[in-house]
Image (tube, rainbow, N blue to C red):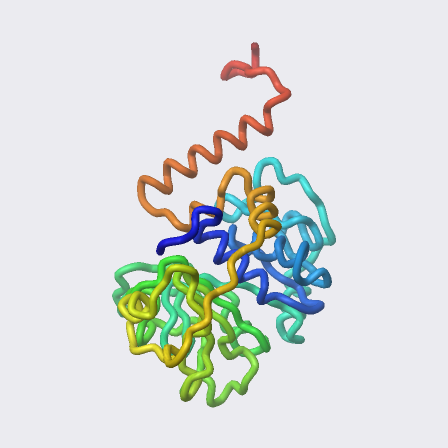
Length: 288
């Protein structure tokens, strides 16, 4: 995806995610992109948000991108502690928002984070449905993001339905939990087509309709007439993202294989050096 030199695709995605958040709700930030979007929203767009960082940090601390599911070694913040009961109470009363990063999403917004391939003999076993069934049956706004928009991730039918979308999935659930927004590296999509199908809301700078159709696993609507361009990040957006994530943990979500492994090691070592900058190096047994 071609982008102007002053910002990158991750900054477009994070800024777009941040601008969707609003209101007095608890926002969970379990990925680097989700953390940075929550941080940016709290600072610039939605000051009434209550942000849940890592479970160890609690609520109402500055969200920080994390390595895997743990905190940065340098993140020693402590906020308001929350139990899982508190979090599920927020979900069931529609006071919870989360950006979910599914492995697959289909034309009706059904999502899959359980397995690739047939359930009985999967090609790849994923993390499992986790809290998505609750989110997709109780929340009035359900947000998704995908960093590699392709026919393998934006599909006609998901291999396993971890979270309910529109169409047949929505018939017995009612409107709460229906998919609201999908942000990808190509654009922003909603679910306002016939029977709640996915449609184009805007395309990121430099992205064409032909590219979106080529990289989508089904014919996608919303391309009639003039297509809106996604508003780019401002100078303040970019500054806050880069200040919050100086080690560029967010870039890991865009990588895979040896490149991701090398980036991970580099980030971990830089963080270790930051943490131990004031301590002398010692030998294996703790002696100088």
